[in-house]
Amino acid sequence: MRDIKSHELRQMYLEFFKSKGHAVIPSASLIPDNDPTVLFTTAGMHPLVPYLMGEKHPAGTRLTDVQKCVRTGDIDEVGDASHCTFFEMLGNWSLGDYFKKEAISWSFEFLTDEKYLGIPKEKLYFTCFAGDENAPKDTESAQYWMDMGVDPSHIFFLPKENNWWGPAGITGPCGPDTEMFYDTGKPACGPDCSPACDCGKYLEIWNDVFMQYNKKEDGTFEPLSQMNVDTGMGLDRTICTLQGKKSVYDTDAFEGIMAKIADLSGKDYNDNEETTRAFRIIADHIRCATFILGDRNGVTPSNNDQGYILRRLIRRAIRFAQGIGIEEGGLCQIAKKVIEQYGETYPELIQNEEKIMSELALEEQRFSKTITAGMKEFDKVVKFMRDTTTLNGKTAFRLYDTFGFPIEFTLELAQERGLTVDIEGYHEAFRKHQEKSHAGAEQRFKGGLADTGEKTARLHTATHLLLGGLKKILGEEVNQRGSNITAERLRFDFNFPRPMTAEEIAAVEAYVNEAISKKIDVVCEEMTVDEAKASGAIGIFDDRYTEKVKVYTIGEYDKEICGGPHAQNTAELVSFKIQKEQSSSAGVRRIRATIEG
Image 1 (spheres, rainbow, N blue to C red):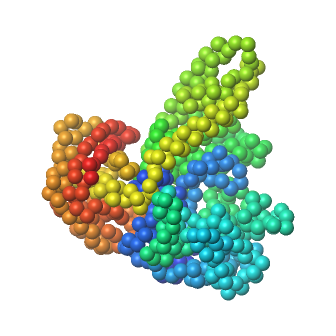
Image 2: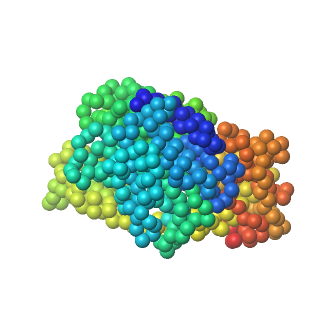
Image 3: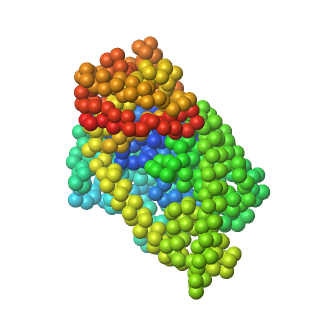
């Protein structure tokens, strides 16, 4: 088995699948442009959903990429050996082209061939879908593994909870999968030990998904118009296995970042369990925050949506940084190491370094004020405590929810004053809050990409016209700095040094509505990047584009590179209204707008 560095694995994977006829495509944004059902790109399949549903991809039917992903559902688990909020997913795709046989054959070749990963086949185990009322048992995949020389005792059939993938949102493409595991050498936990266990014997390193179905809003499944393959190999976990490390945080991907944390704190990563956990949380959260801030659709810390997640990551990192002695300003130095580690692969981090640094520094300052306000409120609460030495759980939660005061700080202050905290009551209040938030999110995001597609397509077309209007009224130097669309509204960030006047806002609004009133067909053409440039199409011409791109033209009002989806005619938008124009960050303005269509 070869000891491979993270940058070597990225390149090796892409070159391997390029040799199998796949076009290499760049990573999509971490913030989905047109899917209101999720806050971040959570899997490699997410940006490709329209093409998995049948839309033609300009690069063809065989694709390979390294996709940036963020998952925050298990943020509290970060600090152990394997959980990360940000990760890179290596993937190869068949859009109605090859299927199970080729996908499994190439997976086995890449895993075991000495030219590639060189993992001994006796160290590999495999799982296949056991079947249920929605789809049959996947004996076909099992047979293909055996055709590769896999011993039948190394193949397990597991239920949907283990061997089914998708959709990325509530509805959309999905299907059974076959997963590949590395035997870590740990003893079996019992006679029924399998890759479904959490005992640590089996470590998942790759996943081949056979997307055959579309999940509908009512929970039923229907066959897709084409049979797709969607694979995912987590880069961090794979290099952890190849480098023989116990934790993803011990690999070369984190080496420089961990060294900087040690330098700033004066502590050693392996001092004790508590310090190790703090190092991992800081490293993960600042890596994730750096990528979110540096993304081409990057957001800034706020109290809503992606901005709330970003703020939580940064403030959690600050808290653990303070705990190991890192002074204010240290997070920026750690973020610089992240940029050094990943900047060559993801040049947007270098391009947006100033924004990353300024937002991290500003959030550190804000959090310092939060801590001060929280301590004042804590002292006020304690002053009025009567006949008890236990701080009420609901009060502890109010300190967190209203003042942003971490429960760990409350516990420490209480201990200093000889008090205890009703921690069970705190967790109960927190749980009720999460249930309400979850219910609200389900209501807000119900319906998935396929079900809100027409509305989001119209809103997406409106953003194109909006950019055209901004360039016309404010100047050609105006460019997009971020975009987010839900089923109800669009949000559009653009570079501009000052607030727009009421007259400018009215003029841009009129520009868009004029295009709507003319009932213009939205025309899509495929062309090379050079042809797109020559035609005058708007676009940030960097390495995220493939050789061929889609260019959408809306009469004389807008022409730009985009992956869609779009309305077919501007009349579908009915009317356009700017609701608010405000600051997003230094030198960047934000518009929120709606349409009637």
